[in-house]
Image (cartoon, rainbow, N blue to C red; front, side, top):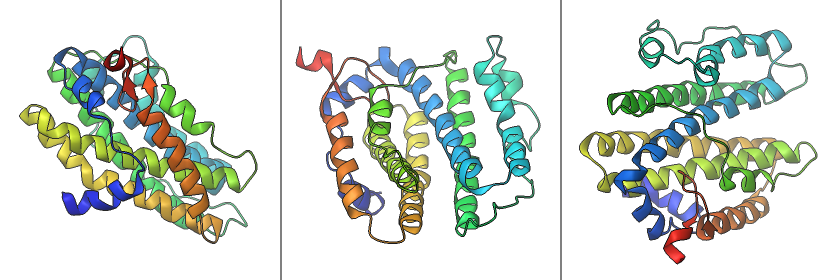
Length: 258
């Protein structure tokens, strides 16, 4: 685990504050933690789809990808949810066999599609895994609004292309790296089921962060260390500053400094 986490710890400019860990492991916060984690997995899959549909696919292929997401989004945005029915649907629910057509003139389309399709499949699977854990513990699913962390990260995105794409990919790397770091720190404090589950997520989250960075470097066509440094400082500020709300990516709990 330490070998896996070493590059992530070096990439992030600050560690998760102990005060956040202490808040996260409180029994009364378990439901919030799991619900927000579940939402984060879905958002990660939707983000991967955004990259592929916006930049790499023709219109027809993009519509095929939307069909792939439809069962998940129908479940999430429907007021009358049946978790059992959703989890027990067709065993091939997370397969995608569509034939992609890359946009003309987009040189790096195939590599973006290959990495993002794998990420999307894994994030959808993680969403289902968290949902099943919640169901077993009688924790109902609910939507949660974007927190300060997500909004703060997106404020750093430049508004022109390809700079916007590069920044969003770098931000994706930081979100995945931070998730990996928090899974590792939380796992020892949780029950056996959650401990095993969070440890099982580390390898895929670490790979996702690397994939995002590699894609950012590919599209930049050169060194991106200056942008990484700027975004790293912004990310560290969000994590180490006071946050009025508690969620999976929140900063220092306000109650800890009250």
